[in-house]
Image 1 (cartoon, rainbow, N blue to C red):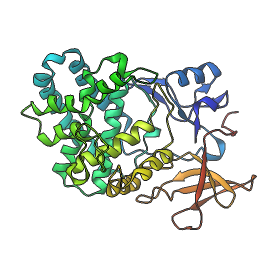
Image 2: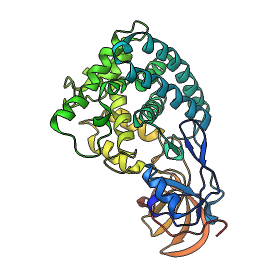
Image 3: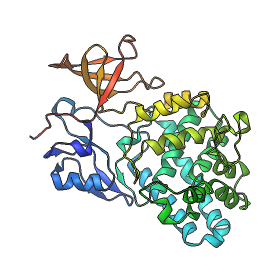
Image 4: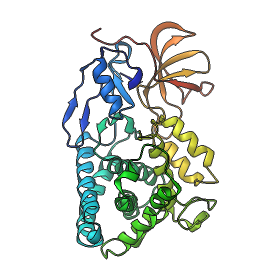
Length: 368
């Protein structure tokens, strides 16, 4: 199957990956014919990319370390806790957070079990869900990215668990921000931005007052917007004054923010998000963390159409763990001429490079 931009998918194409809501209910199943009204609705719902059944790539399977069932369970767990915190701000630091923390501990263990059991690179584009609230899905995505980085860095189990808990709760302070500011589609005013920025300190204050929650978890909320060169907030920390978890979350948070659809801009593809991390490596972001992220996450997702530097064009058909920028490509064209499909592994063909990606294309799909 192929990954295409929803806004440019051909009418009548067949859906290759089911679309779910937060409750795990299938909204659109595999094989559904995508009429214009359906495509328009998906765009309105913020689904930027979808997978399409395609004759030349129908045998390419999407693999993800996290099952759809666990994804749904995670969103429900995060959503239930955060909604309660948002509803009852006055007492959010006591019973609600203690109960949520116990639930999150079990969730992190389940996520770590699946991540450690799988050999697949993390590819969150293959998880097509309509989410009730951006903060819930963002908290889960950041947790998955942070854990993938932590595993790549070979952090011990206890630290991985604390990192995961800090990641889930890193944005809990945003539950104190008025909804109209969180979801504002236009540019924030200086005062609104000041309110948004307060979420790091608000989250820290909420978490540090709960005896069951380790202080390092509270510092994840406090430090995820700090940057190596001191340009971050709220304290302008520099270098190793920022805890390793804060440096990991800084990378995971930015990457998910730019590769997720927001009310004020469309999502980037993973390789575009990685370029932002690379451009800030050594100044804004810890180079060790950026490198671990590069190795752990699928930068070119399976199904993405790519162009190679020798004039060949094809679709990503597989990944090489540890070498996310050197995937396996199924070649479909040579200098704009269709050929019998064949595979080329960029890991063993170092002279080949991906020069561009394409999610706007004309293709033949099964059943047309």
